[in-house]
Structure formats: structure tokens, C-alpha cells
Length: 366
Picture 1: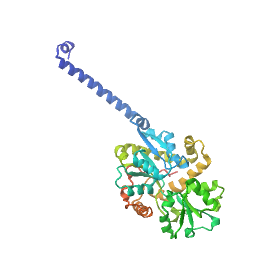
Picture 2: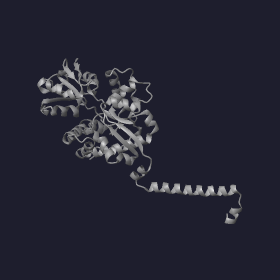
Picture 3: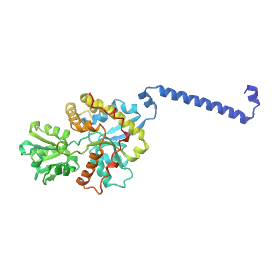
Picture 4: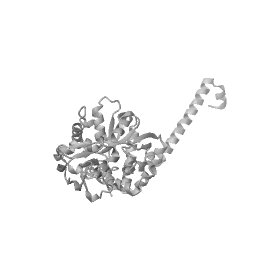
């Protein structure tokens, strides 16, 4: 249309022409922006897109194993994948499960048995947690005794006095250990976590249950030599319970499936770094808690990797995965040991569909 013709056109025609030109310019700008975004490298492209905030609850304090989450946060792996993760210290798996269920946290790290218990006891909860990635393929739970007590094997525990906090995973799962090893009745003494190893060292109890990489180091810190400690790891004595997993709520999973996938992808990338160089990984824990003993926490991290993460079972099953028959057996064992209100449907507690491809999860390869 010429200038003269445009001037003579009706107001409606002129307005339509202007709108058409603006629309064309907008489309062209959108196409250029999309092309520019596509041309960026993958990490930069993820950052250019919307970032989803995620509040993440750990199961415990900022100790060695927390490096699995703090390293990818500090190195920018999460943000490069498209999620902005805030990691908070915790005070037990049960609390981590409850906080994710309440919506106070979007995702968390918790013992799978605690998640199973919650689901079985709260079938009508509107926002039940679900596990999306296994990290501790084998439970870290273990029984500890002192050699001077004469206890050297599970059968020696019959009739003895055992100590642990009431929420301890080893204590909660004790019926599974006792059944697998035909251990007779024992009596339990409850205490706060900081007193557990002290009471064993003083002889107030005959044995304790605790995480392998926690109680072992705590006993050594109380002057007990490693050669004087008897350790009965649950996995080594016939208990094939899974340990801690990454969890999220049904609601968050439904609303933010891509964010969950991004989190697991970045976490896997970071886990490979942690396993390859635990010493370097501890620096990121030190950044969050400046008073930690780096040598102690590096050793704790290495023990966690050895006993629960890079295990023979994990290498067979694949990092991050679970196997149906083993999961179903655990669901039945937990229902009995924890005396849940209802049976546990193993098919509902773990969703593997958000895991990165198997090739990306091959983090144990040298």
C-alpha cells in the first residue's frame, strides 16, 4: 500500500495494517531469540531458561556424606541444569520425610524405610513422599560392641542390653537383623544421639546400633581403638534393606517433572566427582560448616562410599536404581518390623522414571 493509498484508507484498514506489521516484527523477534537460545551450549541454554527453585532437606548435619549434595550446588551443576537448590541440614530421616510431606521442603534425603512407614501409616495423606533415586544401595545400619565384652557374632547378643535413640534406623530395623541371624530377645536402652557411643564406651550397654560411618568414628573419638571394636554390618549379616534415597512429594513431582529430572541429572554429575575425589569434595562441606574436622569428615565420606554407595549390590543393580523383588521383600520386612498400620505397596514407594540414562549413571567406572 502506497503512502497516498494508506492516507485514504479507512481508520479500520490503517489500524489492521499497523497491527499486522507489529505482529510480524514480534514473530521475527521471537524466532531470533529462539535461534539464539538454541545456539547456546547446553549449560548456558539451561541457565537462559526458567530456573525452578528447590528447597532440599538433608537427613543429618553437614558431615562428609553431605558432599554429594553440596558439591553440585557449589560447582553450579544444579543451576546449569535449570534448578536453584537450597540445601538445609537435617535431624533424622523421619523428620525429612515429614517435612517433604508437609510441603515445607520440595525434595529431601531420607531412609527408604522411614518413607515406607509414613506411607503405610498415613494412607490418606494428600501429599505422600515418593523416592526417585537410590543413593545408599545398602543400609548403613550396623551393630557395634567392644571385644572385651566377649561379643563377636550376632548370637552373642541374645539377652544383652542394646542402646540407641528410638528413631535410629538400626534399632527400628532390629527385628529384621534378629530374624536373619536367629538372635534371641534383647533389652533396649534409649538415649539422645550424642550419648550413644559414650554409653557403650562406659559399659552402660553391651552393644549399640548406628550408621557404620557415624558410630565407628564416634567410638574412635572416645578413645576406643579400631581393633577393639566389633562391627556387625546389617548387609554383611543377611539384611538387604535399601538405605537413603532422594525423595520428593507427589505434588511437586506432578507439577515439576522436568525440575526433578534436572535435579537428578545434576546430582549424578556431582556424585561422580565426589566418588572420584572425596578429599576435594570435603572442601564444599567445609564451606557450609567451617568448624568441621576435614580429615575426619573425609574419612566419614570414604566409609559411606565404601559401605553404602559404591557397593557390590549397587554395581550390579545400577547407581540410583532398585530391583522389584528386593524392594518388595523390604516392604514386607519394614511393615513387620515397624508394625505399620497397613501393609506397604512396594510399587508406590519408588518411581524410577525420572532417573538419568544408565550411561550417565555409570559413575563407578574409573
